[in-house]
Image (cartoon, rainbow, N blue to C red):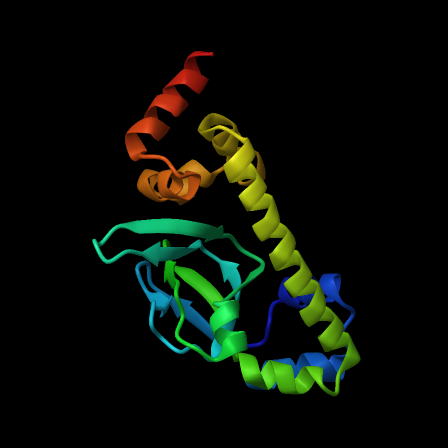
Length: 194
């Protein structure tokens, strides 16, 4: 598949890539459509791939021995997805990545990208910026979980993703917010009546 211009524009918004670099990325990337419920990575897998999500919604979650699942991150279009710690350390992933909806994405071998970064300054800059952004998003999430109550976290999520309620099942939103689905229902009702 030839990448949509908006997909190339997204990459160039991070770091201006040459046509040669775009062609190199196209040669190692595979465009995929995955069904709802499909796992990109399961806890315990030793991953090799990273992904650029172009449509749909994914989640990153931690599963416990008792079978409970806690959503760490919700991913929406035009972002990069992958178990970075496991990729960098070349060890089993502690997290699982699953499609909440049907998704379209590009899949690429992480280590192929790292090799390209060694000789392509613009791609290396893009990689650094993606890592910086990933860290800032993580830091912001930690701050929000510590400093904001559940209602404020929900309103902030709705501000960032206005149609989150129609895209993501309530129990996944609740898990992401660190609350139960019943608590989320109460928050929604209170917001509607205020």
